[in-house]
Length: 87
Image 1 (cartoon, one colour):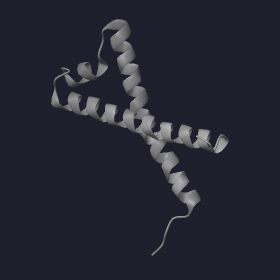
Image 2 (cartoon, one colour; image 1 turned 90 degrees about the vertical axis):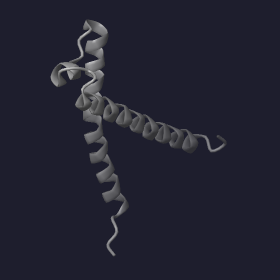
Image 3 (spheres, helix red, strand yellow; image 1 turned 45 degrees about the horizontal axis):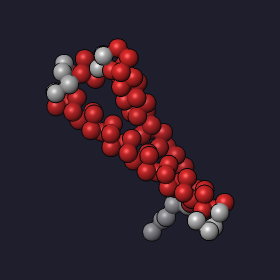
């Protein structure tokens, strides 16, 4: 069996994180439009906010956002633990 080296795994994770970041940015811009101008671009593109495709887009965006928050929290904890092993 061939295994990936740690640097290859890290490179792959960076690519995955960048791919996951794009929908999060799009979602943030969409909710900014909703908050500032009461304009929901996803609903506008899909025809209505209750359309199945719009619901899928909203769900994917929330899932990716929670995933990134979780990953960033783990990294922050590792950083704190490294600086102060008594945590």
